[in-house]
Length: 320
Image 1 (cartoon, rainbow, N blue to C red):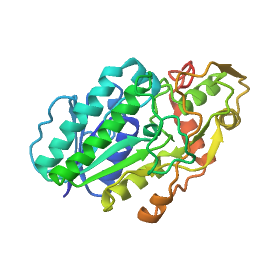
Image 2: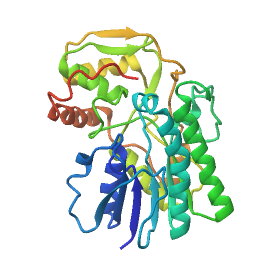
Image 3: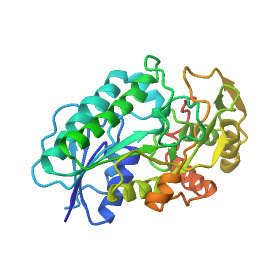
C-alpha cells in the first residue's frame, strides 16, 4: 500500500483530499496543528488502520517513521480573516513549512504536491489568468502575507525540483466551496450562506462588481488527484472558469436559501482583487480535467451542510 502525508489534513480541502486518497487505496498520515483545521473534519476517518492524525506544526521539522510515497502540502491559513489575524504564522507555514515538507519528500524519495493559490496573481492585469502570468501583487499590503508566502513556496518547490531532483507538482487553486468550510472563516460562500440562513443582511464589499469563479470541492479534488499522478511539473490552474460578479452571487445564494435578506454594501478591503477567473486550457489538455458539478447542485449540498450546523453557524459577519 502506498502512503501519503497531507499537511493541513484537518482543513476544508485537506480533509476532502484525505478521503480521496484513502478511497484510492493510499494510506494517509494527516498532519495539522488545528490552528484553523478541525478534528471533526476527520472524525469519521479516525480509527481506520490506514489513517492517522499527527498533531504538529509543520513550521517545525517533521519526523515520520516508515516509507512515504507522496507529500501534499496543504497547511496554511487560507481565508482573509485567518491570514490577517495570523500574518506571521501564514508566512512561516509558507516558508518554513514548505521547506520542512519538501525536506521530508526529499528524505523519503516521495513525490511532492504544493497547494498554491490564485492569489499569486494578485489583482490581475491579465484576464482570465493563465499559468504564464506572473501576477500583480502588493508585497507590503495586508494580503501580501498570504500572496507572497505562496509565491515563495512555489519558488522553493521549483528549487527543490531543479537542485535535488524532487518530483514536484504545483496546483494553483481558485475559489472553492463545499461542505466543511468554516462558517466564520470570512470567505464569501460560507458568509453569504450563513447570513442568508440566519435572515441577516448579505454584506457585499464595494459595489459588488468584482468577479469570482466558484469550483465545487469534489471537482477540485479530482483535478488535484489527476495532477498528482501526472508528469506536469510547472504550476497548473484548477478552478471553475464560470465567472460572475459578487453581487450576482449574493443574489444567487439568497434565492437558493429562500431568504428575504437584504443586500448591504461595505467599503472594499485593501488590495481586494477586481477579477478572478482561471484559464484552465492547460488542465483540460494535460489532465483531461474540467469541472462538472453545476453551481446549483454544489450550492444545494453546501447549504444543506450549513443548515446542519445551525444555530452554531448563524451570525458569521461579512465576507472577505
